[in-house]
Amino acid sequence: MAEKSGNNGLAFILGAVVVVLAGVIWYVSSGGEIPGADEPEIQVDLPDGG
Image 1 (cartoon, rainbow, N blue to C red):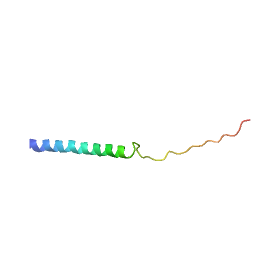
Image 2 (cartoon, rainbow, N blue to C red):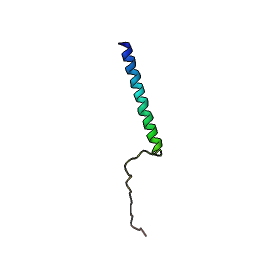
Image 3 (cartoon, rainbow, N blue to C red):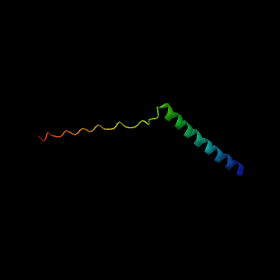
């Protein structure tokens, strides 16, 4: 039983490494910018005070 739990732990760690590596490859290939929602453009028009 100890061998199976050891293999499961190793498989879990290896899977985590694969996921992290895939994330790093995606980040580098996308130009280093994480795509997100467009920032809203806010414009404030004040009346002339003069």
